Length: 266
Image (cartoon, rainbow, N blue to C red):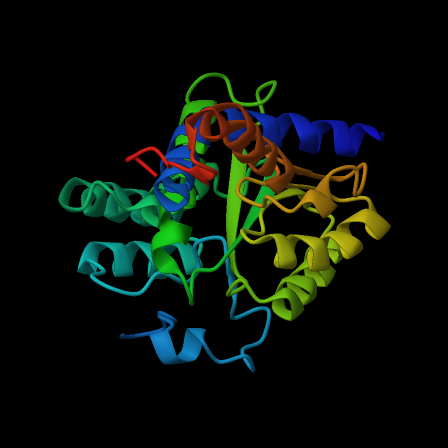
């Protein structure tokens, strides 16, 4: 593996190691506009005709709909204009009003980097179709980016994070992948979220040798799929085996008169 890919793995590993709490909380829960600011509405986000450029941001536009503070709008406008000092001030102030805003945290960290040297990764997530899932994963990523950059960074080089809205759509995920592999600044990808999207985009990442780690994909097909495509959660095989073992070892013991008596908790 090249030095670039080794750096990407290190960067992604740091993000996923520190951010796994935020992602894990989501996984376990699911298992058991004005001026020059480009704010995407829900209808726009679900439009498959959006360009890839409209689906991606490093802070020059917001991809998260909902309650956006005026200070965040001003901070994003300043970041788009490369007025990093103003962007930092406004985003810091916005976070005092709305602390649990991972997009603002990521853009604030990007503003602090400015035009300086950085290692860049992109999170490919269903911002438009499943914003709650996207936000939970982004909270883990934002926490990780913040902790990495405030503790010496990656051998002194800070981590910059972009966000891409793939809508959990395999075709869109693949288009985003094509765009990312052409960007020499992007060292790795966090995502996509679903297995279908991960496999579709993974074909591109594998062919172009760009490291991608999905925090939530469970398909067995991803196992040994590629040297460049990884995941962090157990596969469906592990879940199926655990269920089968439980049925064989526990439920079978409760047979009575030829019938299975299932535990109340099931």
